[in-house]
Image (cartoon, rainbow, N blue to C red; front, side, top):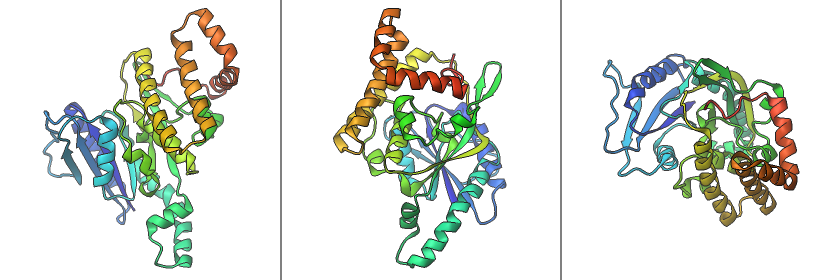
Length: 318
């Protein structure tokens, strides 16, 4: 099995020494029949990617964008250039545990065993890509460690929360349940064409867009109960981040409407959820109360989610 780690690079040479060590460590933990490559898409063409010269390239491939196009464009280009059957979209400042790829592969091989039986039954005229689509290979989602100023915290803390990683309605009423695509092993064959053909101009929610598209086509999500991924600490302003995320989300909602890949009722619910949360974050007490009364079907599930998931507020930002 071959896995491709795709990383959008933007003036990130400060992270490259650790990045290369991480790739090499994961390669050393693979079985001899398995492979790992890293595809770095340089989205800051005015600055070259500089990897440490320490005696090996670790199967890392670097491609320069002609101009800055944003993280979604970089990820899609990496997807077109990679040669793995499974991909991990890893940010330049995040990390994978040294056995993360090996653990993902071992888990996915359990599904491949069943697929091999189907392949033998249907015959060689069916490609493995087609078999993956027929079998609906899952997206594997690992637990995540969130770096804080004073240490690390586990993201999925309760069984209740772990079960929601692939729950479609939760993504509509609560929001994105996955911290980063870096904690996911995604079957390349399952990635919808709509995601690769409609590149977001605003950074922030291309992964949320991808999860919704996958869930709409009934791709299963399977939880790997190990913290294989570490989300790097960035002391950013949450409200500023949230506004950028909302703008990006509205952009892909427009695509969902145009492409008719989601039930119009679900699109309206998603739009209402984003709008309500925006008003709740920045509104006065009166605005919050009025908006909540009009959106009790969103407020109550969020209240229950917060209580039962024990999720730290705002990922790992202050």
